[in-house]
Image (cartoon, rainbow, N blue to C red; front, side, top):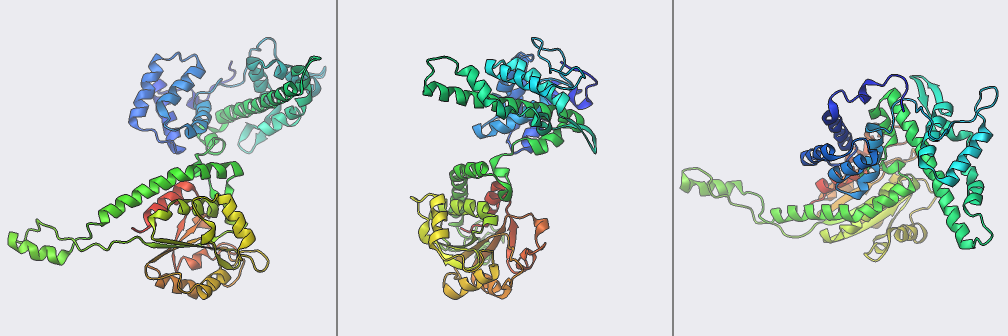
Length: 471
């Protein structure tokens, strides 16, 4: 199954144990919590498995190392890199499967498409995997600045397996008595087989690329990230949907942390003066601590949120999390803006879905007045003018947005006044810190007035919110 020299990092020079430790480190680097006990369990599992059966090894390690089903996609991607199906070029045809060629020695694309359609109709997994390897080797190679590499797009560009649906369907749904239901079942099966073949080609491409440039580098861009680590500003619709499904779990974690902090705060802070006075009876040794009288009550939260398209994913997720944490505050008021501000608290309640609430905000509220581009200065000025009593000495002010003002007046004095009034004030920014102040960003200026925090992912947001929210 191999040809040519094998890279050193794929030779497991430290043995199975060292290779397994390297795999565990890769899992941790991609956000999967694997502790020493799970690593020891994985080592024990390996000693009793048939190491020649790759699928058995995959499932055994998954059982030992994973705690949540949401980690499985990342695990599989890393497993394919650390425990590849082959090393080097695949050689040795399975049932004489090989890429057809013209008399001049070039790949015969039309004959290759017919062969692929035939194998997809038969659903011969072993032969399809062998063909995928040959397609990547023969059609997917290209010369990069770092030397030869492989591309799944280049490998499939001429083959175009998605256009073979009708041919595969004809083979699956053949027969005079085929019903519409049978045809629909066959159509879905054909699409699934095509998708599986594309996945096989992409996996083969990653394997060959890893041999050229290293597993770690390929893993950094090809292995699926944990949903908590996905960048808000680059998240796809599917990833945002996964974030929303995980919000309740994150909200429960935050609520428990706040409850613990609130429970501890009931004792009050140590009253140093009274403690020292009481220690006079014990020779100056402060044996009995005296606590100040605690101040009961939950804080108020005022949320000022940019709902423009550029930060919609970040704003939606944060609003959903805050809605789930409402009971931790005595009062929550939510204000949204694009180029002007409007209160939208009434759109959020336990019975309303976030998508419905966001749709109502954009349709029913007055958050857009001019061209629909973000205007933080106008939004801050309108908020201070129309709701002068919203922020009080008991309020925690939380501003959400990327601080990109489209080169308009940022109204720093208005924000400075709000910060002075509030008990706590923080700004959560979904952009990289290195981009603050670039272009039309006023984040560097706002950061001199209010404490600004980078919140690019759900994990960062959870850590920041759990640290900032008062008790």
